Length: 480
Ligand code: SF4
Image (cartoon, rainbow, N blue to C red; front, side, top):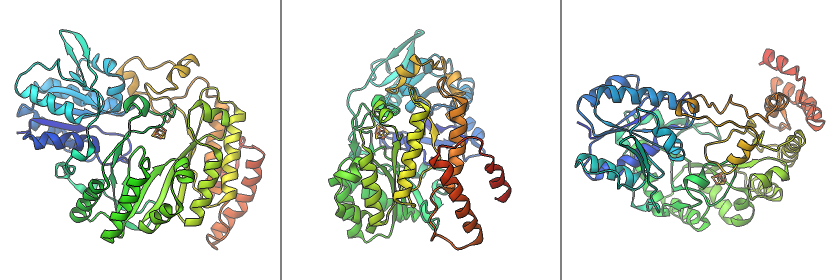
């Protein structure tokens, strides 16, 4: 019998993979003797049979981690099953429930919410439920007592070095979470997600971090990081690590130490992560960047977000365009892939601002044709982000219930200030991106030569901001 059931609800895409938040909560519970069962609805087709079997045994609680959007619908449906078939408490955690605990608790099928970092809170909650103690004193939860919603914050964060290796044995099959191709080279690899720190000290206006992590960055020591990597290598033959931290590079000395330890182990591995251009341009030495390449860092992803200085200031990105250009040059020199992400449709953004973004992308590609630019995304606000009030002022009507948040699909919901004209241009720009400044040396195949020719036309269109009436996309469809 399990004391605690942890449930990862289905999402449309299976990407994102490892249910790391649930594994992190499970670790301390297992250490203190609780029996834990983890069910991942994305991969386990017989999830309902398994859940009902667990519910028959009378667990203390069923914990869900839920993201904003469609995943809420799945989590609500399963929460209903738990309430109908058992006495177990339904506890929601994760970013959405943490940022909107009161609204979440208004749903009759949810008993409690764990706010923020869950390890200590979940353990205390399970203990109290087991001993039939009063839960109202537990810090970091939201609960309903006599129809009243009570919320309590928890001060401080845990020391990540105290966490034991994640209990990977709870996963039905580790292979669900192992990607078999290198993200950069496309060659065979065994890649898994790795978490080495939490939070971020920066203050981007579109990011959940300011509220959720209160600008506090916490990290595992280099030794602890290596221990987790070693475990994954030895037990599951993992040779590529996709670091999923919000901010891996905050402490350059820690990164240096991780590099040194990997070098001592003589591992042949691949690593990918995200970074900020202020770090790679100014804070990290050339030697350290060179070391990263030698040790298997194949690619780094950056957020630039906009080419407009006005919008860059609005979103408090705290980077400069000089830092972006310097990073491109440095990465070209050391031979590491770099990818730069952009958004469009921020409040107060005009079409001119959007053209500044496309102009800057052009400048980047001129500098180095190998820089990668993924499709530009249209901005949608996340609950509680710093830009929230401005969005509401500009006419955004926030969803008023959990059910309404469930239909808040980041790809289709549009803000009132986002015009059809902008949406169409972004769509066209995203198709054109694949032909912009192609590397003439890349391939001599006929198809590629044709793409190069077409690229010249795209170049002309791009420079003249001629992103509308993109009839050529039908030709692309026919040819491809
Ligand atoms: S977007 Fe990145 S850099 Fe900005 S606050 Fe969020 S995690 Fe930090």
